[in-house]
Image (tube, rainbow, N blue to C red; front, side, top):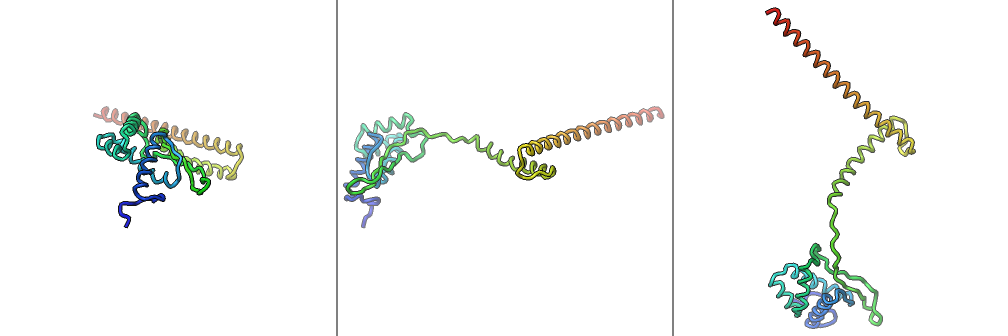
Length: 211
C-alpha cells in the first residue's frame, strides 16, 4: 500500500519525484520563475509556500528545516534575507502564480510558467464601505419622497429634467414651509409664556396690596 506517498506520481518513483520537486523549488527561488509541466508546477506549490512560511518565522528551527529541505545554505540565507527585508510581508498566502503556455510539441503536455508573486498587496479601502452603505440606505428615502411629490404634482415616474426640477423645487418649498411653521409655533409659545408670566406677576401684586 502507498503509505506516506501522497501526491502525484509524475511518471517516476517516489525518490525521483522527491528529488525533482526539490530541484524545481530551488530553481524557482534562484530565478524567480521557471517553465515546467502544469502537473509539476501544481505539485511544488505547497512546498514553495512551506519554505516561505519558514522564512517568515525566521527562527533557528525554521532555518534548519529549510536547509534540510533545500540542501543549500546560501539559497536559504538569501530567501530569509529577502523575506526579512519585506518581501511577502503583507501577503498571507498565494506566493506563486501559474500562467499557461499551451501544449508542448511531441507529447502534447500542458506547459506553464510558474513565478513568485513579489508585488505588494493592495490595501483594502475600509473607510469607503460605511459611507457607501449609508448612501445606499439614504437613497431609497429620497426616492420615496420625490415619488410622493411627483404623484402630488401629477407627474409620471419617468419624468423629464424639467419635471424633476419642479419636484425638487416643490420639495424645497415644503421644507421652507415646515421651517416657517415651526418658527411661528415657537413664537406663539414664547408669547403665551410671557402672558402667563405677566398674569402671575399681576396676581402677586394684587395679593401684596390686599395684605
